[in-house]
Amino acid sequence: MAPFIEPDDTRYDERSRALVAVGREAIAQENPEALRAYFSPDFQFHGPDGDLDFAGLEAFFSQMRSAFNGYYCERHEIVSVGELIGCRTEMGGTFTAPFEASPFGTVSPTGEQVTLSLINMFRYDAEGKLAEEWVAYDNVEWMRQLGVPLAPTRL
Image (cartoon, rainbow, N blue to C red; front, side, top):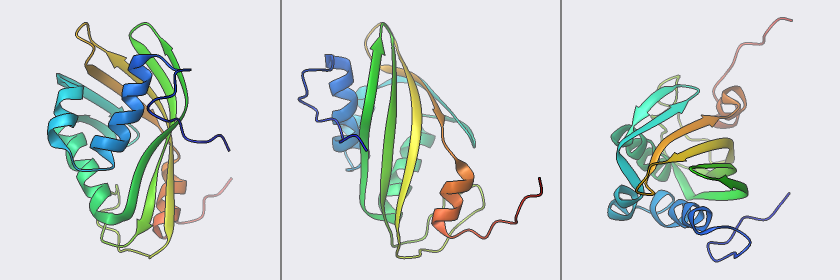
């Protein structure tokens, strides 16, 4: 697996390095001022479980930090073209407290290490703020890691 990108990696443009830094400094760690400064006022998130505004996404990050000890948000590959950045993101930690942001309701901790792998597309506005994000991930695999009992599917 490719190593995580460092915020000072000069192979990437300034916007990409800032994306890496915000993951470490304002998503994995609670830093509401830095997080708010990074996002546009009308930010929109589009994910497998529906759409969120900035407040909803901020609440999701808070829930992740609360539920997963050693929570991290790191970037792997990044492609930056104009107002768009595409990347592969990895979030995770040890599941030590109830997780309320599940599509199945509150999930009890398992004490296990979990990893959420995402494919992201980010769009930035004219001021360089994050305006919109699209995320894809395997929700079934994520629920399995969280210990949610899932019914087998028929082919």
